[in-house]
Amino acid sequence: MGLAGLVHVLVLAGLAGQEDPAQDARLAAELGALAQGAELESVAERLRAPGPAAAPALLAALGRSELALAPGTTLALGAREQEALARAARGLGREAFQAHWGAAAAGSDPDLRLGVIRLVGLVGRSGDLRLAVEAARPPLAASPDARVGDALEAAVAGLLARDRGTLPLLRPALLSLPPELADRLVRAVAAHDDRRSLAFLVDCLPLETRLELPLLCGIARAARSHGPPFEDALGARVRPYLRHAERQTVRAALEAAGHLQDPLALELLLEHAASPEPGLSAAAFQALRQVTLQSLPARVERWQAWYAAERRWEEERGPRLREALRSEDPRALATALRELATHPLRRAQLAPLVAGLLQHPDESVRLAACGVARAFGPELARGLLTPVVDDDSPAVASLARASLAGAR
Image (cartoon, one colour):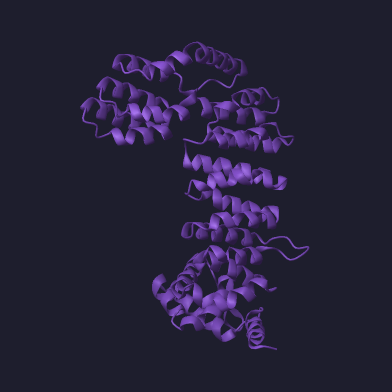
């Protein structure tokens, strides 16, 4: 056996579920000081004081729920104890664990595998995602531990926050995990504050039918979090799922279409609003309100009448209004903007035009553009009006501030 093979065997022997009573007792004694009022950081410093030699014990402890203090007595590892272990691991850094976590991720000890997942979230880089996925994947004929799902979601969230290269690597991970764990990856991506995460989830939709429901739920969460404007392509990719055979998938697609504020989904939303299924009907009415910014009652005939009137207005007035919005006459521009404020359905496409008119040299145009921005809903209003609160015109600045206050 070569040196590398011998080292691997020794690492496995040291980590494969064999508890070290002396190390357990040392960690437990240090962590027990928390109950006596010790500060978290001072305890963490003592835990990592041995340097890299502390890594195996920390790895093992991170995946466990208790440590032996002495024969017959244990210390429960609650939130504060886990936080002290996490701070100690961060203090040691990724390099201290590299010799240990590969063997632990591939081993059979569930506590060590859980410890690897948590460590990857604490100190890992994008390339370490594979270790977390390997450690999370349940053995044959076994169901994932609930703790594993929580740890995997937290680990992916930590990696996404630290390393932009993590997002592209999640696609093969999604396809390789059982649905209940793939869903935890989707949750972590949906909560990520990078707008790329929404496009990533939409791009994953056609990859695997078993992931359609969690992905649609994730798209709705991400869209709600990021807010408009959204690219038309995002709504176009979600729209076909409004005709899905599975009722639960349709309901998730309704929620996603609503948060994406997709105006081209309106006819399908109206169809589902007329559904005899209360859950689908309620979700469709909610989506209609989000897309249109109208507060009509949950009665299909009222929404159908509104939609018919909106289509007539678009056919009769839309072309002339768009022409007027290109006018160099301030009075014509202001008049067109005031009319546009009562028809905000295409607000995502019109937002860049309104943003430009908020910088128009004529005060009356800027005032009218403020009214349109407010009519576009709170999310778009914040983006459009925030640069105008210091306008040279006191009237424009005051209207912008009042509109922003009303948009909160």
